[in-house]
Image 1 (cartoon, one colour):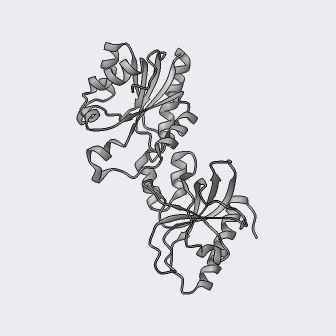
Image 2 (cartoon, helix red, strand yellow; image 1 turned 90 degrees about the horizontal axis):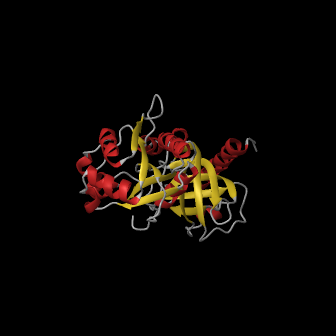
Image 3 (cartoon, rainbow, N blue to C red; image 1 turned 120 degrees about the vertical axis):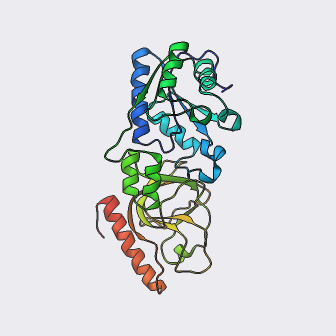
Length: 307
């Protein structure tokens, strides 16, 4: 917070974990953007890093959907002028709702308006809610409003997105996010078995962020250094047909390309549709036959063309 300029103009503030920046989050951001534009305010999104549950109850902490860097990019794309990531620790967790308001909203951000989701809770033991914000606003000179949760019949939430991913339902996750779910990472050298089979893959180890359930997907691989984007058949999981490989990873075969050199390149892999689950094949020949079919289906889904 000490990095925020002391002469910051009055702000419209939106607060939340914003993991995934799904459609529900963007609904709240859209209202905060309206308020900012109507009143000539700077829109600041306040988030927390790490997720509060990682500090308070680490055994129950959810798997993240976005890194802090990706979250900031998505918040900016959704209308935020700036993002304040509050480093969450035991000290911050001990603040009363009033302390949070005074330290973050009043002293640091000069808040003139605050917009949150209707279920927003804050402060020690989650003692504060939207009504608390309104009361504090009357004292400190800012307005506060809670926006009803969006979505239907399923309310959009980060938990819902994680549930979709755990079941391999990347289309459902994309519906809640308003975009395909994606993971990022640096391409590492694998065992090169895909290359030997005629399907060289860009391998990205799964990290602390969520990945879809094991299986094969149609999606896209984008180089973050050049922005180039390629259609891909994507495998998530281990390699059950072969012994010895137990590291879970995301392997992307760029359709009809064997000339790409991606080692050491940071990429984004986005998932459009699940093609099948992960199975062990009785022979390499059967595996290759299935991979040919996976590639054909991915090509038709992504490019609208059959082989």
